[in-house]
Amino acid sequence: MLCQCCEKARATVHLTDILASGEPVERHLCDACAAKEGVSVKQQATTLTIMQEFLKQGAGLKAITTHACPKCGVTFKEFHDQGLLGCPHDYTFFADILKPIIERAQDGATEHVGKCPKQAGETVRRRAMLLRLQRELDETVRAEAYEKAAKIRDQIQALEQS
Image 1 (cartoon, rainbow, N blue to C red):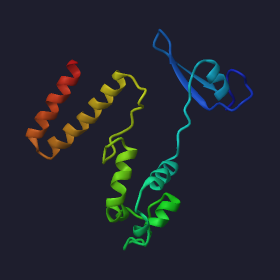
Image 2 (tube, helix red, strand yellow; image 1 turned 90 degrees about the vertical axis):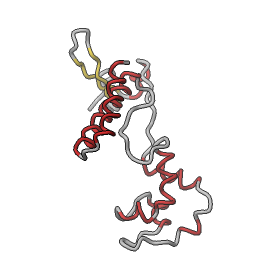
Image 3 (cartoon, rainbow, N blue to C red; image 1 turned 30 degrees about the vertical axis):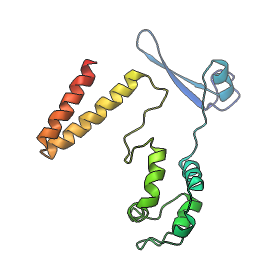
Image 4 (cartoon, rainbow, N blue to C red; image 1 turned 90 degrees about the horizontal axis):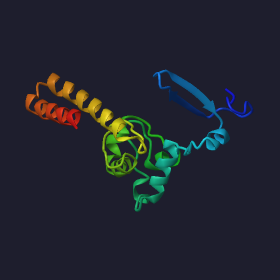
């Protein structure tokens, strides 16, 4: 798709503007035209690049590079070099090594909690939190953990009132 502004370069920035009437209007721009309009686009690092950088920063990992997963045979060195694990069991087998890496990549979280850009406004973050809490509430009710469900319900009510 070509840039709608210069009609020469490939469109790499895709914007959706909301008109006063509430109607969405899509615009597709190249990096240069987006910059002219004041849109700042950060290049996102790939997961492989991030993982390799974290692994390079780790100290004392040389001793562990020979350990291999008993299920798939992948070694930590292979993971370090390729950025890919061999099987789901590797997360358990290499847990001691992977946990700090995952925590750094997820800003301290040890499990995936969804994505919300750091530059997103408070409204977007609040909405994401409400959705997460609602899913958690549904799960706790299904598990019949009613005391925990009541606490989550109270958190949801507090967020909705603020």
